[in-house]
Image 1 (tube, rainbow, N blue to C red):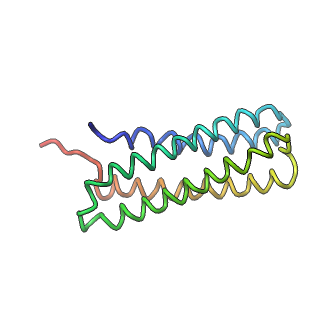
Image 2: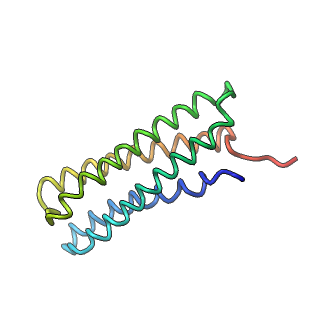
Length: 144
């Protein structure tokens, strides 16, 4: 069975930044009910990020002995793991804010700043993965 990683990874790449964007729009438009939607999308994105890390680690097994790309694959795995841990931490740290309805004060503003920074880290992780595929051909099956 082919790796599911290329399919799964795109969910987190889209859903996590989308969630943060919806939170920012909710603040700007004063549509506080959008925060619940944003948080649900955030959790789904975090679960998909965990699935992406697991599927990526499984798919990387074939490249662990390839001296040309092994270091790049390992670096991408490290970025992905740290990014995932940050997003899980963000998801969990938002629980009390969500339950108390504290979605306008400094705590929520701090949460949003860290979430935007996490999206930057997500972008970097995705970029390193894209480099593996498009520059080095990792995971690309060539039929001859």
